[in-house]
Amino acid sequence: MEKKLSGTSGSATDRGAAGPHIAGRPRSPNIQIYRPQLTSVLSIANRITGVALSVGAVGFVAWLLAAASGADAYGVFKAAVSSIIGQIVLFGFTFSLFFHLCGGLRHLVWDTVHAFELRSIYIGGWAVVVASVVLTVASWVFSLFVVV
Image (tube, rainbow, N blue to C red; front, side):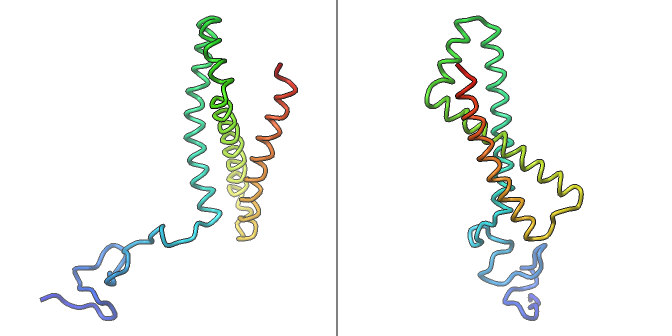
């Protein structure tokens, strides 16, 4: 015979690490029922941009190998990067670079035990997004005047 827990509809065997289980309720927070918060979206985006930077590093090595292999190999690489898809990938990589950089600067501020108030967290989060977009667009506009 199972012993009932007071205040719950489950039995003693229903208890998990998080405490007694109430029938029909998830055992842990279900991400599908919560509205995404700026902080969680930025955290996930920071991880994604970190992965994108790793992939971009492989592309950088491919560029170096193409340059070292001669004019023909470099011409193929340059044609791929100059295509519309190549330009979109480079734009995404540039945004990833600046987003990850700005997010890292935000974490450096947090490491000094500053800006932990809720208002400051949201201001810093939006500053990361705006700075990333501005820096990305500025670098691409600048490149139009520098690259021949």
